[in-house]
Image 1 (cartoon, helix red, strand yellow):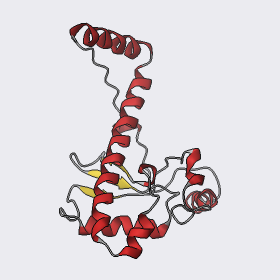
Image 2 (cartoon, helix red, strand yellow):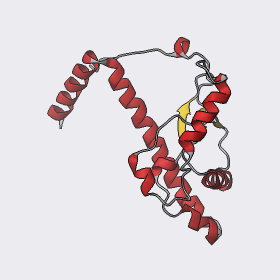
Image 3 (cartoon, helix red, strand yellow):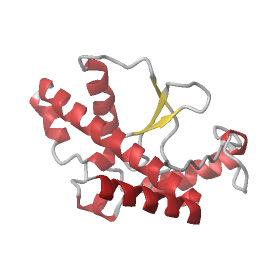
Image 4 (cartoon, helix red, strand yellow):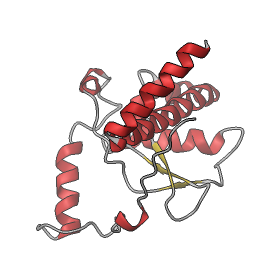
Length: 173
């Protein structure tokens, strides 16, 4: 017990000293994945209260199709829900409906943001075709051209975030 914890701490300290950015990225990805699993569990329970045709739409849904819930940069304690670009519009409407009919209703600390930039895994093509948008890449490119005017530039809804990023590496004692 104590020996294992000690060596895990030493390994974490060593990894942080080698590349602090990698461990922070892993931690952030783990947090997003954990939130997607929680959303999937809540929505899977909530969809059971819906009519059979909407329950049929939910069949085959995986955690990968859940929104990313990121911490808001401007408001502490608020999560920005960003649906994946590759999720079908009909499934997005069902997810929103499940959220609004859940026992907690729409959460006051959750706001809906722009579409997520997360890329799908290779297994997305194994899902039933009604769950994802097969043209998501083409639509993302068209949206990029609209926002940037066809050239290189910054998206209007994405401010320069460098001023908000802080890297903090702490050693366990």
